[in-house]
Each structure stands twice: as structure tokens, then as C-alpha cells.
Amino acid sequence: MSSEGITKEYLIQNGGKGITGLSPQEMRKAIIRNLKYKTGKSLEEWIEIVKVDGPKMLKERHQWFKKEYHLGHFQAQIIAEKAEKRRFVPNRQA
Image (cartoon, rainbow, N blue to C red; front, side, top):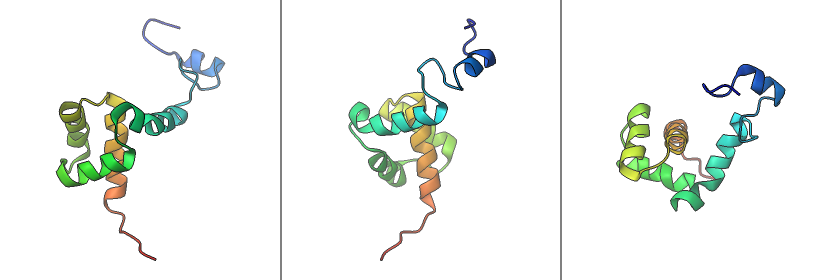
């Protein structure tokens, strides 16, 4: 592997998986699965926090999570994106 990071050849040789042995999709799922353990809050809890107190714009949300809650880059990114996608979904009641 080059000093600049994962090369295209490395990914091809390893079936599209990075140095962790996980594909990008598997890594996202792992981050979401481990949120409660790593941060003390589940994805749903983080989404509620951003709906009540967070910025409206995606980029600002990402930075807000990092600054206010000291979340890692990918944790903040995933939560901000998930909150954005869920923000405009109406509540469905049976």
C-alpha cells in the first residue's frame, strides 16, 4: 500500500475492502451499530438531539456534532446525513 493511502489496486486485490477488512457499507453499518457503546446514545437519540437543538443545514450539522459533542468525523457525518433523510419523513400512525 502506498504512503498516500489505499490504492485502487489494493481495493481490487481485496475485493473492494479497505484496510479494516470492511467495505464502505459495512463500515457505515458498524459505526451505526457501535454508536450507543462509543457515544452513550443510539442513532435515533442523536437524530432527536439534532432535530431539537441542531443546525438546519447538513454541513453545519456535521461540524456542530464534532464541535459540541466531540464526535469523530464519520460518526458526525453519518448522523447528520441520517437526520437529514429522516427530517422530512412524516410520522405514520396506524
